[in-house]
Image 1 (tube, rainbow, N blue to C red):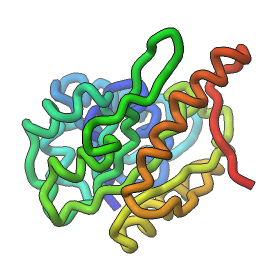
Image 2: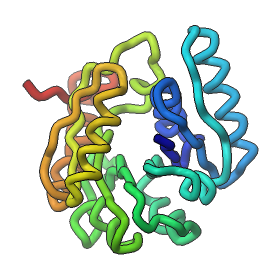
Image 3: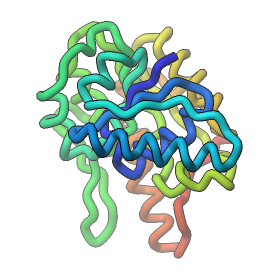
Image 4: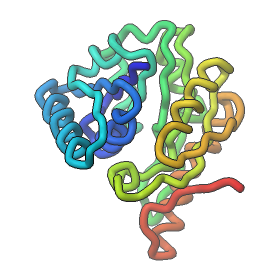
Length: 216
């Protein structure tokens, strides 16, 4: 399976590439191809030094969409609309949104778009046959990159296409010790996205670092 990461040179995108490229063919996308190539080399060097396989390549965001079976939108909420406006070719593809619409005020707060969630907004912006799922929303960038640590975290997955959701959950379950949970249709995404400002507030007010979630 080929997984394209739009925004793959950001902190979360690079961390995802490190974890995913040991199992999947990862295509790191960026607005600047040179950055994508540099991130690819860095990923390869880090994993090879650990004796781990690495299958990744660096391309433009558009090529990451073109070549991938599954596309991850590893971009901040404020960049979603302008980024998607420059891209095409999502027809029939599975798109994973780890995007969280939130703001840092005196505390972190959930600030959804008029659709109710980032995932529903993304669904509206993409072709009708695109299969949008939410996943990975509550995993901090630092946790992705901390390769010495297992990711013993739960990952709620939302989506309206049962097949796409099963595929996304299968991807989740092949990363470290992540455990995917079916959280329901895409309409539930607002609940998942609002968990991120919650865990950030918990981390802040309890002097914790990189808080995650687990379901038992």
